[in-house]
Image 1 (tube, rainbow, N blue to C red):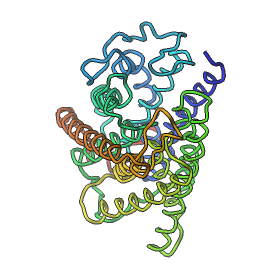
Image 2 (cartoon, one colour):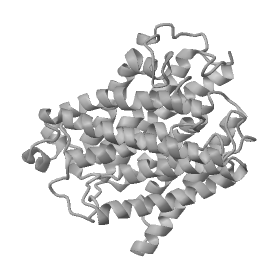
Image 3 (cartoon, rainbow, N blue to C red):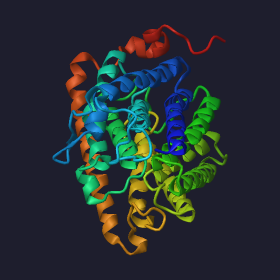
Image 4 (cartoon, helix red, strand yellow):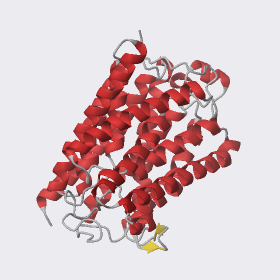
Length: 407
């Protein structure tokens, strides 16, 4: 075992853990002032729920002995046999326990991303059940397909270094399904953005996400290695390119360079570089950031102006479509010279990789959207949303009895 690799993975796990409350601040600043506590509370709730689910069941379903390429077995149930010895199938230089807790943070943040689709109206008890079911039935199988030894997409050679398909496409398209099933806010007006209550919270959340994302991507090298260095560099580069792209687009549209647009663009760039971060060069990451910035900005405009879907904080546009762009561009820009464990992409003589990426994206979209839609329909008899009175009062007081601000 390597003490340096172990230290880096543990630090990275802590960085990724920080990203879940950072999502709470990022989303919490965007909602109305009477719902800011509820959004941050929901992110912390998910941190608690999935931490336990992962220990008991989730880790085994994702990284346990493969069953037909579909799901992991229960050999690691309750972390049975998961200790200080490395698991050579995944990370041969660190304790399996360190690998387990690093991967736990990915499982935790994924459902936290979804809450932006139904903020200000979701019933708390239903959210608790949804998080447990979604993590077990949606996230865990997809993660096994892509990352698990024996997973069918893994065997096909699909590339997803740090979670573009597993985390962002699954969460983004699950958010879209949730927005459709839960329905619109009662104050929703087509084409009108939600009135943000605290722009500094949004900027703080984005900055913390950017910071934590170095652990998200560079930590996925599972060691202090040249691949980790590359992932660190391209993560920062793509975020910068997408942030500037969003700033320019907002400036052109509204005649003012929006701070919130710049912060949101950075997050979209981070999403897009995630699957590619261990496989592409810094120059390619600039292209990925610019393309992702353009696509996600246009998708946000399309959703808000051309549809009546109230994906309130645009989880689908930012994470779903950002993840799609990143996964597909991985199949174009990937270079085996950067990571010998990967494959060359379309530009480097391997067009088959692009088609493999398309398949992985399509399967993830269909499965995550479809199963999320079904899960929420099954939960609907419990009540998916709060009453009209509670929605008007705001979830901070109606559900939690705690105000975000006393002015």
